[in-house]
Length: 121
Image 1 (cartoon, rainbow, N blue to C red):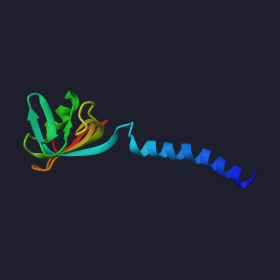
Image 2: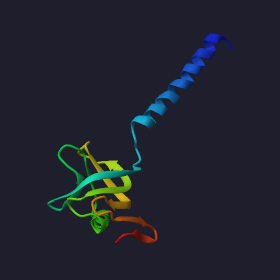
Image 3: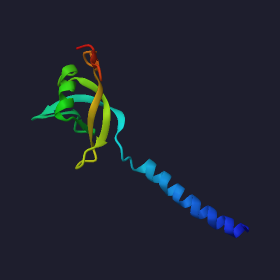
Image 4: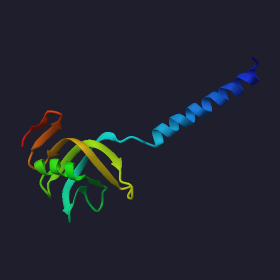
């Protein structure tokens, strides 16, 4: 194979690899284990972390119960679990499958796992 043929082959090989790598870094398709932290707020029936100047994290009903076991409204809290962007609001993150909740104001912390909650309850 001559040099021109090698360049053409390399271009056709590298282009899909480069595009694939960019797609994997730009668009996260699966939720990642991550942390959400801020002031715990309750608005109507919605429980969330965050506020006006920052993004918010919301929880479903099952995970809302886990958060309320540890954190109090108005306290600074940290929650760890699987996160994904909310469908209608890019400044919103939904956190589910919560594995840890920490109330930084009171110092209470609970880890949730297959064997049930462990920590300060």
